[in-house]
Amino acid sequence: MSANRPLNIPGRRKVITKNMILEAQKHTKSNMAAARWMNVCYTTYRKWARYYKVFEQHKNQTGVGITKGWATRTTNVEEIILGNRKVPRKWSQSTVKKELIDKGYWTEDCHHCGYNETNLETGKVCLGVDFKDGDSKNWLNDNIRLLCANCYYSFNAYFPSAKKFCK
Ligand SMILES: [Zn+2]
Image (cartoon, rainbow, N blue to C red):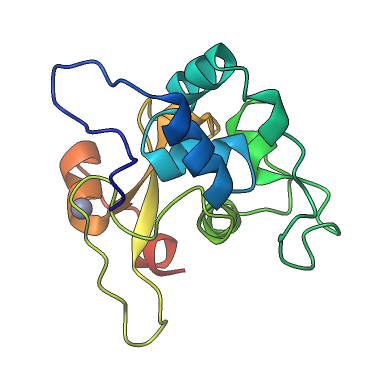
């Protein structure tokens, strides 16, 4: 954990300095990823980045250090969680989940308890997408999170299927 990341003190406003944002931008390829890197929500990040006038400069970094194959994808997962695009028909929930993890927007662990045990058979952590408002079409960044089976059950009182978690 870098000293440049903002401290999350419950009940206290996060103070974000220009240096923190520049540091996050150095490590990431987009504003969304930078917010994730700093562990602050995108809206907070955007507010401060605009305030320091460093928001625009971190946009449209496509092509810089991004893995091949990216350009052939017609849909950018960031557009989905910003609400600019709908999830393409051919994408399953697992596809979006995978995109969010692969592109660095999500860490592969339970966003509630931190569970990150790799399943021996699949080599993945069994985690499911949780929609806070219960609407599985609402992919907005603030509405989605990754949960382990235990936490998912605690928040939703039902468990969909092992497939949804381990795929
Ligand atoms: Zn959990």
